[in-house]
Length: 404
Image 1 (cartoon, rainbow, N blue to C red):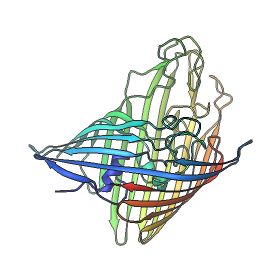
Image 2 (image 1 turned 90 degrees about the vertical axis):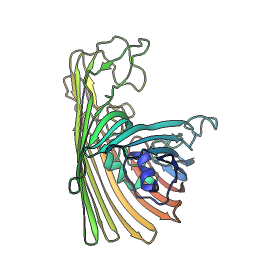
Image 3 (image 1 turned 135 degrees about the horizontal axis):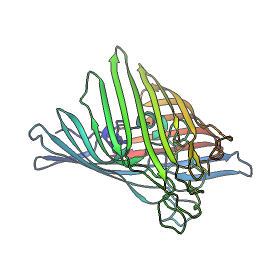
Image 4 (image 1 turned 120 degrees about the vertical axis):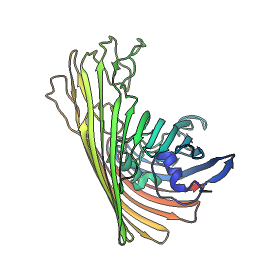
């Protein structure tokens, strides 16, 4: 019986393989194979806030990953088909310092609910899982098993890692996707996704400010190969989506993107490329993206009031968004030392015919030490210098993960 290894557990978190130790509990249920696996983590973080009026603070917080509980079932091969179903529940271990202990971040998030059908045609996946665009950027990010950017000093829930500081969060979205069989180390994956609509509704109206009549389209091509003493992997992806204003009247609520009713169209599009090279004990990762109306942190969404588009009554303009990160690691025994830097940028356009588009730069420098004590315990120490309006601070975090 093949055990559901820890690399598959991170797939429960991010729908892709991530190197990690340990194995999950696996048992048979008739001809089916069922497994249960999980993660719990916590960090002690000390931050020096550099923003005006800021001060030092300490916070007990989870990292970029929440806690994870994953159930997976694999069918027997029947007529050349194999089915896989997976549900991942992700509660937070962190609570806000300003709320009661059961509030402000201590919540349950059902991120993955999907089934796959595998055959000679490849894999068809149906349900909710991690999106394709910039998926490998977050999977290869060393702060995945760390803290990275804090997203504010005292709040509950997960930190950002390098989200918004080198890539836009892929997010977990409902989709129909197809992945090709392996073609000599290369594979192609394409999907139609539930489109993202910013702002949702205007205050007091209960009606949608933006609507879409076409799905969001994403795709990714990957290639990997091994050579004597190492390996190399490359990827390239894209995203496309169009939404249109519904000319709803009213005023927008806080955090929503529409402040003026519009019938204009917004087209979000982007491409990303990356490379992952391993040679002996050294690892190098580079990732870059560019596009329009993507957002700096979360797709098609505002970050502290900075939105990736502007509209008037009949037209909309899209902001230019781009970013990158570079990462180097060195492993010795069960310990990995890593250094990385990245940024996400939105260009200003004060002369836009539809209104001013604000600029935004978010930069993060990280030094991390990641040590596998054994197959189920990982200890982590990170230094993060976040130079952005989200959380302009220097922070040191120490903590760890338990896997099962």
